[in-house]
Image (cartoon, rainbow, N blue to C red; front, side, top):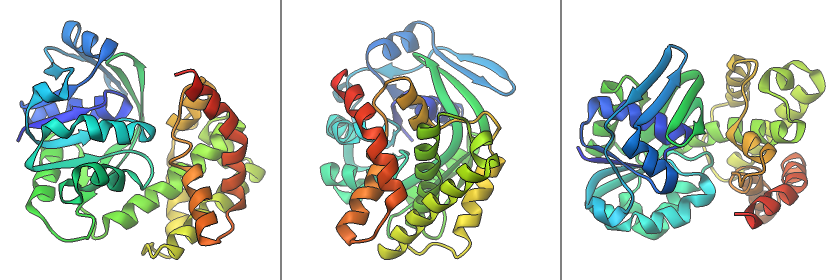
Amino acid sequence: MRIAVVGVGGVGGFFGWRLMTACDETVFVARGESCRVLKEKGLTIETLDGKTVVQPVKVIDTPADVGHVDAVLLAVKSWQVPEAARQIRPMIGPHTFVLPLQNGVESPFLVGAELGMDHILGGLCYIVSFKLGPAHIRHAGLEPRVLLGELDGSPSRRASQMKDIFVAAGVNAQIPDDIQAAMWEKFLFIASLSGVAAVTRVPAGLIRSIPETRKILLNTIEEIRSLAEHKGIALKSEVVDSVMAVVDGLPEDATTSMQRDIIEGRASELEALNGFVARTGAALGLPVPLNSFLHGVLIPQELTARRNL
């Protein structure tokens, strides 16, 4: 299988590294400094077990030069998805599928609007990883895990094949019965924690241990659970407890990518997370006051960062 990895951040860099161990036709699509470093110095991965430098790395800076591939691992930030979907069109052949791994629940549909929904799998990942520099990734916590599947829940050869490649690469990969429910369960976790963490500017260990912030986090999760219910997403009855178990299992110093981006003045995934909840709640007439508050107090920083791009 020929796989193109688009995005060399915490997600794309880490999972691209793992995929290279199982598929020698893995190619990174990168631009600018990331492309230069990959070509000249390779990919550097720091894990809890030490540092690994992989060289050489197959990297191409222009999607049209890649040609058709069997699969695209789309690992750009959520706010970059519409533009990335347009740029990767030259790589999409009749049987190519795209696996978006962004935080949020909109990406498969945004990519599908550009490329056709028949090219899309649903997917998500659990990992604490981030970019230290161009093509330099640190995995800081959580067992890396990927869930993927057809959006309609049907079994498919392509989903099974992609899962098997991840497993061969040493990644815990699964095909759940309902990938959209799995995506929303991750969304409950990442949107709530990212919003609260970005406002408080402290790591997960403090948020979960202080009664006041823990209550805010729980109520933010509950708002998103209610929104999912209104949209017909079949979440498990114990989903809130499951999400809090993930929060409680994070390293004390764990932070989210949205939190780090906002604190460091970069464009973030705010609109795809708390912004999505606020907009969708308003459209459905469903009150989501905490998510609306988190979005409202963070949007000035987000707009400032985007003006500076």
